[in-house]
Image 1 (cartoon, rainbow, N blue to C red):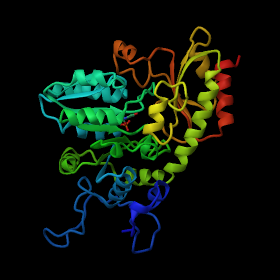
Image 2 (image 1 turned 30 degrees about the vertical axis):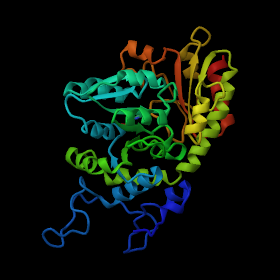
Image 3 (image 1 turned 180 degrees about the vertical axis):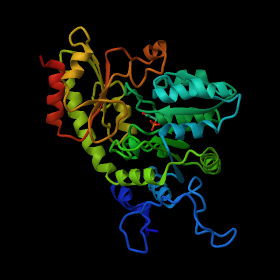
Image 4 (image 1 turned 90 degrees about the vertical axis):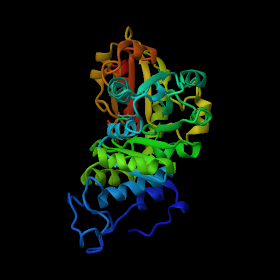
Length: 388
Ligand SMILES: Cc1ncc(COP(=O)(O)O)c(C=O)c1O
């Protein structure tokens, strides 16, 4: 294993050097892919650390060490999707337990809690997590945890993580934060007292739109054993090849996040002045209602920008069909820019009333800003919004 001393390194260095297992046979510089499903025992009961890939795999271990170091956690597990990470976490609850989360979380997480976890006897209340009073009011004797997603998807509302942790501690609850949107480069929930972090590594951590994956990182010793047990028992771990792809992607995380953010800031500022745009959602704008919280809680504002299109001035189809660089696609966090309409795409699994309650409309547009040149991206949006 690589001789590392992560604590003294900055995130860019950690991302490159943590969890690097060099192949001693040929002195490879990067971690090899170990696709072996099973590993031979030296003799009964004695292995070289691995016996079966669902339970553990050297390539996956390398990624897990990397992710744990980037989040400053105790241990990480790489799962086959972000939803697999959340599904694993859902099994920490027992029938009768209750969860409180935001009403504007990722649509797939909403569906999991509302339609799957609820049918297993674990109830969830969806509230406006930007209002700590609403969170407090939703807490019942059976409440076990707060699930935080910040910034929210797709409207980029912020949740005050420290305030949530304070409420959780007061009521003896644990906290889970979905850190997908900011990545560990821009936001460190463990430093704010969160117990468990989940990720869709499909997004910024991998960053190249070529794998689906997830991660669970624990920052509290209490969850280390149960999460490790569940990942193995449920079979939610990722394949060695997917682990290797994410490990390759994560090495450039810091530089990509800086580029995503610089572009997003420029685009958000430009959008504010567009006649067909009635509202821009970006925590980096001083006009964002929680800009001050964003400055306090995050080290950057990220690469996601949403806005409201005035459909009378510019029909959605017209806007979308003019775009050449932005692909009409769900997902986010890749090097290429994407655009989508949450009302009919990413959040269609929420019922209409819930979408409205969360603040979405048919004119809401969500963009994942890539790392192309800002001028080219603005030119593309200009065609979409103003081209004939
Ligand atoms: C914030 C957030 N969490 C979780 C997920 C689920 O991740 P996956 O699609 O990798 O299962 C997504 C997917 O878009 C997401 O945006």
